[in-house]
Image (cartoon, rainbow, N blue to C red):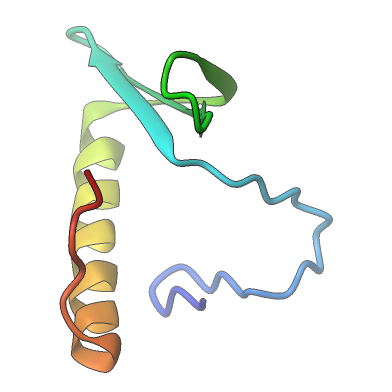
Length: 85
């Protein structure tokens, strides 16, 4: 899971903790975007947020572009992603 532009690696040399997320919320104001990550439990009635990222608008746009590119690469390799409902 390497990001060629930013040099990220799937290994954990810096001790960065990975957490699973299947639930997301995004908010914004004139100065920043707030991205919340968490888990929605099987009962579908409660979510547990565990990580909040606050970033500026230009970095949010860069994140969006990077995520779009990563999804395109994934689909080229593994096929289309379907949405679970």
